[in-house]
Image (cartoon, rainbow, N blue to C red; front, side, top):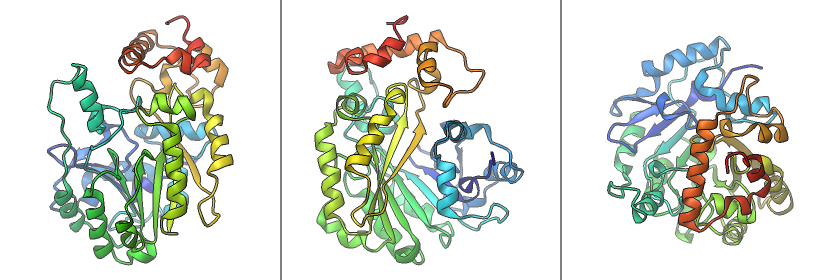
Length: 368
């Protein structure tokens, strides 16, 4: 299996959520892979990127990229395979600027998803504070001006795709203001730039933004959905399944015709066993965009305590080898910690893990 990755050579993930701007080549990497830069310089070819690019040119997998490797070993398309197809970058050529940028600069969000955390959601912060579990102020750094300054110092002539990462990107106007700057400053934005919004599917888009949307080649809404019905509502709390599905169906029919959709599924212990339920719903209800082209359904692995390392032997036997290394071993200490976390928020939210996921709960009988 080749290790070549277009994101290593042409990707740029920018995190403005802390005091210092930090960067990496991909938004799916853990925080340890990010490093600080001076955003007043053209930092795309900073020395921090060179080791990974040189390693990748030798067709060697970077340990930080194990998420994509695990997805592919399970015979599923990954971020790597998708970007190799979508960006078309020759890895032997050093680029002067990125082909894809992921931007994180506003944590404002209206959900507290199980697989997320307060570092990525103001609603998570409020939720914890209301229950005496968050002592710091509720905070989201709205760094729109810093974002524009940083983008101004990068060569954007190769830019084909820019992704707004949340928080919830369809809340407020910060993202739309950056979008307007991009439309006016990226060469050939109308012909070559795809603008992407990562969204939880709860928000509408005001008609006043339709004209701006049409200034880009494509606008993609990456909708985060990890299950159906009550399973969805448990994971993406306090969103409601019927409201979200009605909303995205309505958006598909009413937004400008250059808007497309992607269903992004985060694979965790909650939905690993039930992935086919979501795949079937998409096939029956949301298989194509308005013009008839296929809606992509992508998967990536959850970080944090609900990651797939915390399955039991019973769970692993039920789902097979997919996503796991051959030397995987059950970790009782981490599983007990996870079960306590589930129980704590079940009580706070008046939810019931065992009732919502009876088959999965059965795999954890030794711990429940």
